[in-house]
Image (cartoon, rainbow over all chains, first blue to last red; front, side, top):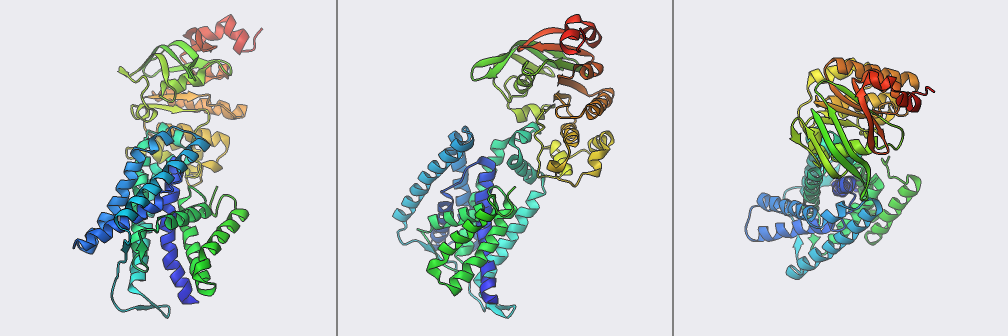
Length: 282
Length: 232
């Protein structure tokens, strides 16, 4: 049981970061980015290709994260501009449609170029015992990186730019009144979101292979986590990620791998029925 | 400090305010009085780039700021406190104030000024802004605007939703600010309060300036007395 829960936490921290990237963009721009998972896969493929070309692992990992962040920047600067001009429901709908289109385009291009593309960051070394459970080194790396990034996000929140980003989520008019340019904040958050997607793809590949077709799985997972945590709520997304990670490994262990997605969706639906605005939603 | 000439603005191509001329000098307190729907809020929103200007010009400190985006108007030193306040409800009072100084570092003396003016905010600095009472939220909105040490502070109906006693103390705080040399432009329906603070005033009716003059003259004007001061 301890082993299953520990594995759940390893997975959950990554779910959490994945959800944070989704929820931030929604909170700031009112966009549910359906191409989010494709940004993650883009990063994975960039890493695989640069590794194959002989680059050191760290350089390849950096290139992957940068590529996903750049995809975020391009998306914000181009297709999202007409979306930001819309308000309310129209904004959400147009955002969904356009990002869905982008998802298909990225998916198609990647599958066409790398039909069997898979990233697996094998990290060697002896398994380390933790709480009596032998943890694979890949899991520990993934966890360490996830925790470090979560800590960085927490620190960032207390800086002036972090506060400014948060203020745009809270009240965009208020943010403009104190001199914050919401467009600049959105651009930055879109890049950050891409970087998080790319990073999660990389940490995932440390424990299980990330295939070129994994895009929509990442997106759906991120959506579930973001909704359960309360859309737009960063702490909520992280908490939801950890909880759902545990739910996911427990159900995979006791019920079966193939039914895990159904259990996850069930857990999400139950949360929404009990707390319609998510775990920490306002 | 602020010169507005021939300003027209509105919604969906329809002007709500038309041909407004207005001037605020350095260190002055000026009020715009008018009833609900006279166009006070529209005028303010147009001044700080929240609404497109269809005609006319806004000059601030000798610079043309007509149609500039709101965040750049704010950085130029024109702080606007709307009636709806637009605080950051989930952030603490302190964080709201710190953001007021964006993008600069919060100035300790500005923070001290705000806390001296509104000791209540210092007591509640750790509470989320959304948990404050209406009067405290108004204090916070003004405090947040002061953190940037603005050269002009524009307030839209600072007494909205406040009980008469609180409305009066809000104006006492504005009086303190005026004595400290802060330039003020206040839109108000509560005309006696506004005229007690202001050096000069404008009467806005149906989107146009009907009257203007020194506050004492306006207070004595029979039209103003009949329409806004409840004197037959």
